[in-house]
Structure formats: structure tokens, C-alpha cells
Image (cartoon, rainbow, N blue to C red):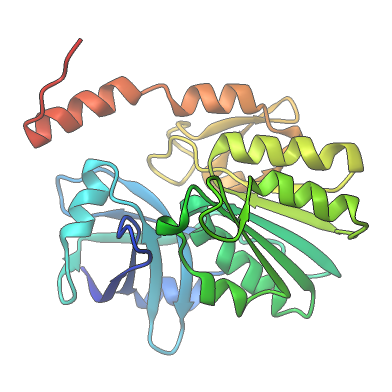
Length: 280
């Protein structure tokens, strides 16, 4: 059992939650880019969440999430002092953080919770790091202070222009590249369509682009095959071969299609669990 030691909302909309969990063995070994799999109780499903931060001395691991499915909604109902049944990790390969002069880290929405620790780890090596964080509007902006302290330059964009610069992360990234900024690497973390378009921006310039993939994932050990993705024409498993891959080699159309494979079932299950009525 793993105790929750702190909990807070990360934005005005209160749709993203940060939890700090006492997990000594995970905290001892985890690195930026890795993830855990939790189960709230013995009846819960296995859900992967990226490790947002950790404290080896306090033996804690930080996770950030949006309560969108039944399991994350159940997790969101827990409070300080409550326990999570399973908290397995660290899983996946850690991010490559050394050997760079200048890197752009692009985060979209809740993906900024994953982009932030990667940017922080790269910045701590002495590299220049530009974070481009994109949100729909001001209300859902999160981790601004944390990101600003973990990079050289922070650029916030909003779709509606209510905060930062109006536009998308890809617009800002391309503007920076066209202005003459030389990036050794671009890291993109967020919704699959956003990462796909970031790769489309960087490919003509020959800039290596790393993406963090979170497809359908169940066991986290490569045995179930549910998280398979096509990279460079070969089948890879995001849980053990990733979660980070060369974005220019990812079959984005296949990934996006597979990620939406169970949307109908998820919607129907949520309706049954909440007493909702499904029409059509």
C-alpha cells in the first residue's frame, strides 16, 4: 500500500491534480521520462502515469493526472492519508538528457506534466532549454512557475490568446527555428496529433525529434502487446522499448487510430458507472 502525502490542483479549472505518493523503492531508482502503473484497489484497472518528480530523501514520487476515466476519477477522490493499492515502477527507459547544447521541449496541455521533468533534467546538465507550453485557454495553464525555473526560456501559447501568445505550439516552434535558433533536439510530449505536427515542423530542418508515446498500455512489461507501435517500419512496445521514440519514424496514423479503438466501450462503461444515459 502506498500513502498519499500531498494533493493539490494545478490550474484554475481544477481539472489537473498533483499527488505526491510515498513509494520508497520507486523513488530510489526512477529517472525523468519513466512511468509507474497504479491500481486504486483490487478491482481497479492498471493505469500508466508518467513520473513528474521524485525526492529520494523523502522517498516520494509525484504524479500528475486529469480525472477523465473511472480509474483516474477514483484516484482523484482519494485524499492525503489515503492509500493506493498498487504503485509499480519505475517502468520504461529514462530520457536521454546529456550531451546537448540547446533543446526545445514542447508540451501540450496535460502533456506539460511530462514535459516539465524532462526539461528540468536536461537543463540541470547545463544545456539551454526552451519550453513551449500550449493550452486551450488561460484557465487550464499549469506549472508555469515550475517550468520557468527549469528552463532558459518559457513560451506559453493559448489557442484563444487569453494568455501568453495566441496560436499553437507548432507556430512558436517554427518561428524560433526560422529566427535562426539552432536546436540539437526537440522533445514533444502531448496529444498524438500535436506530436505529429511538431514532427512535421522539424523534419524539413533535419532536427532530431523525440516523442513520448502513451498508447493502450496494460501490463507495462511487454508481455501483453497492447502498447505496440510502428516505428521505422518495425513493431515496438512503448512500455519496454520506450516510451520515447524518434518521432520522424512513428506511424502516426496507425497510432492515432489505435488510441481511439476503445472510445465507444469507454464511453458506455462510464455511462453505466455514473448512471448516465447514452443516446444513439
